[in-house]
Length: 260
Image 1: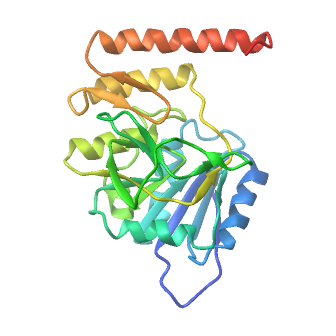
Image 2: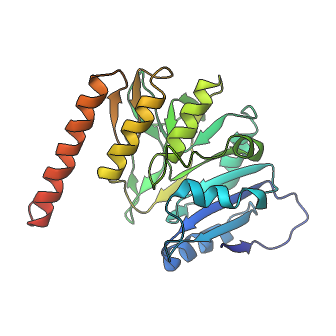
């Protein structure tokens, strides 16, 4: 069901486990090589989904939850690169500053300012992923799925929602909103990482956005993710869903004809 790769044994305590669901082995291996250069040693659980056995990232992550025994856990995309040898240790240090059921990410957004914040790079040319910068650790409403985590106890007690997130989108966002609903906090931290790919919305994303927006309408009046933002109130919620669907249809129509 999953492939487990462990870093070299060392005397110091291993603080975190990194869980990654991947479908391209070569890209996953590139991330592993980058991890092996880190001063911080972690346990790695790689979930090979190249055969499509999992229909959602929520299901894949939940399937290995009992394999995680470290204090902290990080859920990572397959195409994350660490820019310096202490990139990971600096991120994990921030985990010690949060409460047990809080969530930490490396790119986030607030419903108040609607600004996307984070210091990570994007693409092979390592351009800035978003315009807003982070100083240390800052509160936000939601974080991006590319790299996030917290205390292992948090995700064991409150696992990923396979009902709300039955595909490959917004599973981190949903956990952030669940944290806010129960009175916990969400943070974005200064991180020296590169995410090789970018995000792209589609019909599946829009459906998930609508479903989560409806479920957490009492928690946030405006749902702000790193990809989209829209009011959660009835009427406006439906209007923005239609607007996003039309955008996707137009974009895909033009791309199919070689028009950008």
